[in-house]
Amino acid sequence: MTPREHAQAQPEGQKRAKPGTTGEGDYYHIIVRPKNEFTTFRNQDVGDKGHILRMAGKRSSGSWDTHAWLISKEDAHVEGNTIIADSEDAQKLLETLGSKPTLVKGDIFEAKDRPDVPERSKPTEAQQKARMENIKKAQQARKGKASKKE
Image (tube, rainbow, N blue to C red; front, side, top):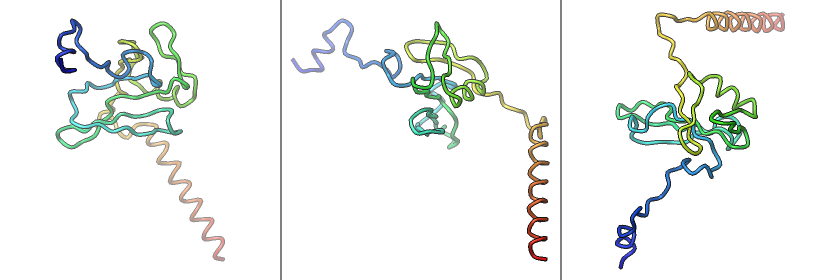
């Protein structure tokens, strides 16, 4: 009997567990968009290496978007059905999400991505404030250069 025939003869089959479903991995998975919206995937380290990862997916149109966030178990823990941040980076990430992550299974959570600000609402107050601060910094730098030339 070949290994394939043997696996098919078993009542439950021989299927590998999907990442995060057993709860034994190194990361908590926070899914923000369904997997079927993407054709390919890539991991990106965010901040310190190996602590927070962004799982980016490429759409059929060619644009990239976030499929999921992976938070190291060193940076967070689970109490009941909620994930609690233990580091500043993890806390910032959880605050920027559009909703609180809810436990699905194992180490997998679901949440909404950060809210999208419509173009008609831009520039926001924060964007205007940041722009004015940047202009003032540039003006100060120019004044500093002009006084050094004299």
